Every structure is written in C-alpha cells, then in structure tokens.
Length: 326
Image (cartoon, rainbow, N blue to C red; front, side, top):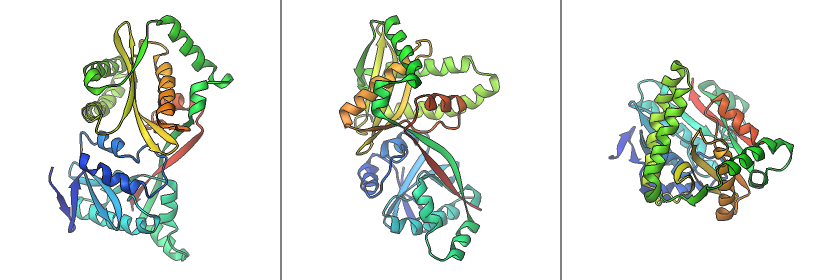
C-alpha cells in the first residue's frame, strides 16, 4: 500500500514497520485493554486497509473499509494531547467519508471518555461537546487473576476441574508443545477449518450465514498471525491427541502485569480440551511474562461466549466505548 492523503494529512500504511512506533506511544499511557497492542490490530486488519499518522503528538490508527474511514483506537499519547487529536481525527474522517455518520472512534477507554467529555472547567463547553458527539458503551474486556485460572480452587471452579480431570483421563496420551508457526501452521489451519464446519453444522441457517460472514475475517487473521508470528513476538501452545493437533492458543503481553489471549481454538468433539489448554496457557503466560492478570478480550456480543467468560469468575470487567458524531 501507498500513503493515503486526506485533508492535507498523510496517512501511512499500517505495516510491520509501524510496530516500534505505536509501541513507543503505548508506553505513554496506562492500559490493560486487549485491543491496545500492535499485534491485536495488525492481525485483525488482515482483510482491511490500515493507516496511521502522528497527529498532535498522538499515534492515530485508521481503518479504510468500503471507502469509509473509521478509527480502530482513540489517539494514543499523553493526556494533554488526546482531545485535540480526537477533534482533528474527526475532521480527517469527515473529509474522506460520504457521510459524517460513518466516522467513529472504537475501543475508547473509560478515562479517555472522561477526559474528552470533561476537558474543560466550563460546564457550558461540556454540554457543547455532548451536543455534537455521542459516547456509547459497547463491550467489556474480561480480566482474570492468573493464579485463579491455574489453581481453580473453590466451588465456583468445580465444573472446570471436573472437565479437566475427565479430559486427562480420557486422553492420557495428550501432550502440549510451544507453538512454532512454520511447524504447526498447516495443522492449525486444518483445525480452524474443522472448527468452522462443526460450528455451522449445529447452527440455524440464518445464524450460520451471519457467522460465515465474520469467519472470513477471522481466517485471514489466523493466516496473518502465523505468517508474522515471530516478528510479532507472540507466544502460543498447541495440544496433540493421538498424534493430531486438537487445539491451539496464542497471546502476548499487554503491560507489566497483564497478558492477553488473542485467539484460541479447540476441537469441539474433544470434551474438556478447551478448559485444559486454557489452564496450561495460563501457566505458560505466568512463567514467561511473570504476569498477575490475563485479559481474554470481549465477548463480541455473543451470549454463549459471555456465559463462558463469566463462568471463569473475572477479576474485573473493563468497559470499552465508541465515540460517534451526532
């Protein structure tokens, strides 16, 4: 891709060369949200066009989809620069987009919303701000204490312990390996395709159509993750049963005390595999990064995924917001 110029602002392609740049700016803010890493955005932009610019000393990340610009993250930088950068970013999106209603900023942290809305001591200016912008609470990230995921102590984790014990008893020949992209990539894609097929098999037709639209993006994300696995400094596990790869999981470090799980897939037909690999990966993240917490991202609005993530008893839920124009 080449540079993209809008409203006299040059936007650069969001490629691997942007990794040290965004990480420099991420170091200026406190964050434990899973979306605030290079890898998380680079991987999921595999099927879209990503662009960035340094605006008012903030790193600003845009996505161009169907000719319309949105922001994947709010401007990243010191607090005193963020609000002016937000205003400028909306100007850029409006100059490009066919309607002001397409412009939005996703995955905004709560403290950034507070800064944006209450950026002045004059109450009337705050109301002017709210007159032109709409702030909507979207999803939450699920964050767990890593020791709780490893120990699974108490009645609340009884079902998880039972599922893991049944798995170990049913598949005594299982073994886990550290994920190596070149070694495991073909088997991972085969498992991913089986996972999609199994999911669709038990879905109503109308749900399956919506699911398959989204899974196209996820397939591209997994391929990009495997292609650039080493450059992205990711860490992962795979699990084998009877010599076949039946699960994989990949994550990274978000900050000094929190790691994240970016993507995880297991064979539906292997009961207890998901619970087992999640605990093993929690051990790996703690040992490798010495973290106290693990962020598994949001539930994408799916009720079944929300129930699964709540069943692990989150240490905290971190809300994420979207800023729109009225």
